[in-house]
Length: 179
Image (cartoon, rainbow, N blue to C red):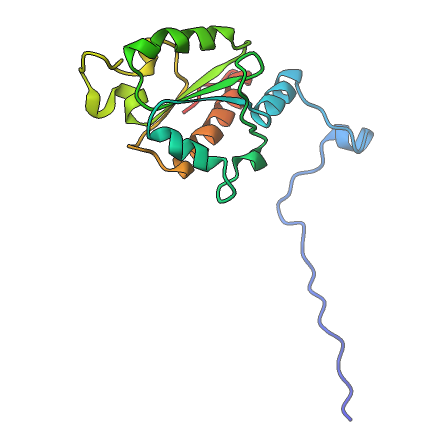
């Protein structure tokens, strides 16, 4: 029987890596961060949306919480009370009769609070644009942070909008403008 030669050992060089920071040499295992960054990270990772489904977009919003998409894995749990919610998702056609309840729910939410307009109808009135009973976008009533386009938008689009909202929260804490 022939003897096997030992496997070759490949050395991986350090390359062009920077030297460790002085704080890491003095206090290994210590993490430093600004309190605003830590609070923004906590807010971004635990959004509690107040779901306000008004039309067909509400079905897509509901399916985002179902097992196939499971938005709960991002730490976002739907909440039926405006007093504990920090994100309002307006999904569907906003008629003038619903304007006052939307404003009231928004005012009951604690600060900081954010709004997502989901779908063409919530964004600009959709196919009912310039109708006598339809508000031409929920941004005429309350300030909107994220617009999710589509008629109706897919659950993946709402998930992307929620992730973009999380990035906006972090960017706002750092004093940068979100793209």
